[in-house]
Structure formats: structure tokens, C-alpha cells
Image (cartoon, rainbow, N blue to C red):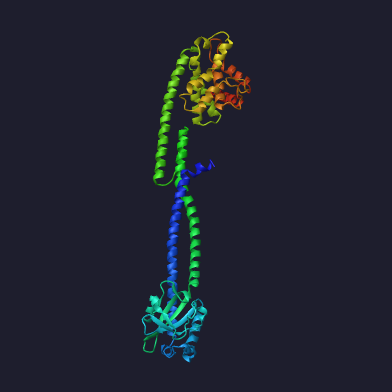
Length: 469
């Protein structure tokens, strides 16, 4: 649970949530508007169909015959009624969605009409006892504005209508006699449950579209948030790595928006920090070199020792295939490897006789002292490791930590060889200098015990090349 909370509160999670919620809101709103429009369009489409059916059916009915139907219950047995009823039944059969089809005309009372022909006059379709639709049966048409307009032209209800026979949607059209006068209207009905069924189909399609919209919104939100947050995360990672000292790191963000501009500024900042660090490094090394010269000024026998060890170490590193940048690191490390001797008394450094155990302990401590001196100001942790380990032996009995070749930094092993060679070929207070050949023999003698064989082999090759140059 503790791991989930930071994830949910992350910038990416927040952006993703906002984008998804926004897209879901837009999707829901759009779906609602489309759904409403679809329902309205479907409803108007049904109205149009009902008007067309009613008008087409009305054209097939003879208005003069309509006027001959007796407007009483006996009228349902008249030949004129039967002829018209038979036509209405055929029209209904040709249009299965229709529930009822019938003909009505006006009475002498305002808004009160009467049935003329209804193929289904029996009360199986009624909801109120005694309500029928035989010729002459009255009907209150004042409740339905569109029905009242039907004598003037085709029309259809604008909303579901409720009457004695239930909830319906109806279309109307005038029936005209030979003179063109509207003498009656023909009406066709759809029951509300049929309309609702059509609307439910629209609703199901709308829900399907909405669900697809939700899936699309989530997918698009995740993709869009990744495109937004990935560059930001790259900048965060870049900032962390810069803070850890990786000033060579650069952020790659393509595009021309504000984030890519920020990434460009970030890279410029990193480049300037790197340049500043190089300048500080140079200043640091100049200071350290001054201290080394102070150290060597105390001991005439070791003057120039650090510079020579640095040069040897660099040449060995290049011979072993290390890059120029890595070779420069070992060169600078070698220049500072003995800085810890600044705190060692001069009479111990230049003692001609054998050192006591206590004096040997002081000498053995100088790599750690060198590390302690450099630690507050050194910019490279590997340099501290190199300086601390340059007196470790390949066989693991060196000092100060007694680690073996597998654990010793390879650059420290290189400095160990270069340092020993320069010490052997330099005159000391307690012994004369060895010749080049004798020093090389000593390196070979202790290769595999005190020294790394690969380093010795590389250094011997460098010296041989130098001799034949």
C-alpha cells in the first residue's frame, strides 16, 4: 500500500488522471448530445414515415365513398364501409409496424370528431369499458393539435399522445373528394412500446459508442500523458544524475515546445557546470601540484618523483588500451599519490638506517592520509580509491587494506608498478639507484606476487619501445 500511494501521487498519475477525466467528460457530453440528437432524429424520422404512410394511404381512399358510409353502428355492415375497411387492412399488412389505421371526420361540435371506418372497432384494443370506434362514435380530438391540422395537410404528433386506447405516436393525412375538399382524415398509429423499442436500439448503440469512447479516452489519456510526462521524467532523471556529479549527461527531448526548450536550457546548464568543474579541477590540481612540490622540496632524493610516476602511469594505461580520458585520470591520480607524506616527519622520510616498527606504521598510513587530504576537495571518487590503494599488492599482503588483485583498482596497480620502478631507479639516502635493466628484472621477479603481470608486461613493452625510439 505504501508503494501504491507515491505512484498514485506522482506527476504522471496526476496528468494521466486529469487527461482521462477530461476526455471522459468530453466523451460523455458528446455522447449525450449525439444520443439526444439521435433520439430526436429517430423520433422525427418516425414522424416523417407516419406522415408519408398516412398521405399515401389517403390517396387510395375515395372521399366520395367515405361520405356514403352511414355514421352509426349499422354503417359497419354497409358495402362502402367494407370496401374501405378492406383497403385499410391491406395498407396495415403492407406496413407491419403500424398498430392501427382508421378514418375520422368532423362533427358539428368544436374539437369533437367521429369515427367513419376502423377495421378493428371491437373493444379488444380499448382500455376503458364501453369505448369503441364504430361509425359515428365520437372522439375528443381537441387534445391533439397535430390531428386538428390534418384537414389542412399531412401531420404527425410531436410527442407521444395518450388517449383511451393507450400511448401512441400517430400520423395523419386528409382524404379529399373529387372537388379536392378534405372530407375526412386518415390516421395511422404506432404504440409507445414500439417507439420505445426503437429508442432502446438507439440507446444500446449509444451505450456501445460510449463504452468505446471510454476505452479510447483511457488509451488516449495514457498515451498523451506519457508524451507529456516522459520528457519531464527525463529532466527529473537528468537533474538527479547532474546532482550525482554526472555532468556529461544530456537530456534528449525532441520537438519545439516549451519542454524541449527547457531540455535545451538544461543541457546548456549541464555543459556550463561541466566547464566550471573542469576549471575547478584545474585549479585544484595546480594547488595540489604546489603541495607536491613543497613535499619534494623537503626531500632532494624524491624531487620530480610524482611527475615521473604520473608520466609512466599514463603511458602504461594507453599501452593497455585505456582511453585518453581514462589515461588523464590515472596521470592526475599519480601526481597526487604521495601527498599524504606531507604530514610525515622529514627525518623519517630521509632516514638512512632501518625504520622502526612505529616509523613503518607511519609510512604505511600515508595512502590513507593522502585520501583524507584529498577527500574534501577531490571531485572524482575513483581518484580517492586509486590513491588509497596504490601500495596494495597483487597477492593481497600490501597495505593499508590488504586486498588482492581482484579487488584493487587497476589504475592503482598501474601506479604501484610505475612508483616502484621510479623508486628503484632513483638514488635514496639509504641506497644508490638501480639501473634500468636491474629495475626491470625486479619488476619481473615480483610479477604475480607484488605486481599485476599484465601491468608489468605493458610497462616493460613501453620501456623497450622508449629505448629503441
